[in-house]
Image (cartoon, rainbow, N blue to C red):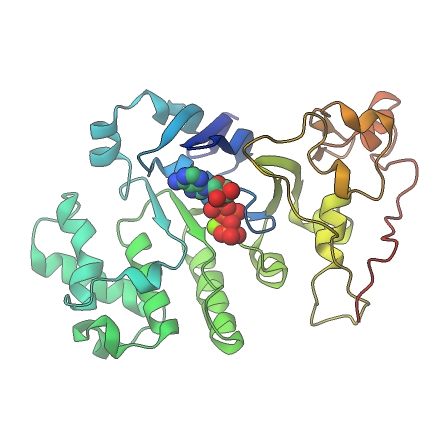
Length: 344
Ligand SMILES: Nc1ncnc2c1ncn2[C@@H]1O[C@H](COP(=O)(O)OP(=O)(O)OP(=O)(O)O)[C@@H](O)[C@H]1O
Ligand SMILES: [Mg+2]
């Protein structure tokens, strides 16, 4: 990882203190993301996706028990910055976050143009209010908002338009990394498609690196260059998108993919029995074992991330032999079946 602007995350952990103990929401997460690429993070509700976004951009609640690891852009390890330095020279300027449900947190009494312009003024990116509004106008065009909307208040805009406004806000300072947490999830299906198109065109226009968090597999397959699957606070699979959507490796990834409808093919949908474990006291071995149709003795100890020959990584013992023997990265049997798991 030499080239400038690549994102490097190493051993990132974010634990929360609660009355009954410690929630290990992000537990030793590492990944590399090359500049200009989009990495989608997939995973069920409660697996720690939002916590990971907060850990990357260091927006932490008060009850943090542990926050450790490395978040770097190029060779610049941002964890060496103190909070004040991070606030003044990293957040917004170099990385921005579109938080989950952001469109509902716009300030109701401030015109949207001023809200989009604010980060530019607050971080000294431009010198004057007029210049900031010019930039806001340009960024509005880019996210497909008519300049007529600049003077409106949030309540005068639809959900999809407000979502465009918050995406515009994240881009206006031209950060190197933008993290989008569920940017389409609260929207109806047509509006989702519109936002998806906005994101696609932004991806084409900019050299920005994106981390896109979603449980919407359809959205992710349209935008992803890389995929990471999160389960119970950990990344259990890292892959380029093409091979992932062609043939995911981890049994969890396979079930996740089998559980979502796609527009292109009709298939019998499956569901994943049970639910993710509590992050208060996660199981010692593989965290997915008790829901896994492929579990075997080995799963009572925690698998490492195993590299396959084709450069993917998967945290599952099924792939141990494949990597040891120089195999093709496939487990001994590839078909994941879900006894009694078929729906409809
Ligand atoms: N400030 C906090 N204090 C204590 N626990 C928290 C805090 N924030 C999140 N959690 C817990 O951390 C775990 C991961 O939550 P997180 O919101 O990161 O999941 P998620 O994958 O984003 O879920 P969703 O898909 O529903 O948005 C959950 O068990 C959640 O209850
Ligand atoms: Mg979330």
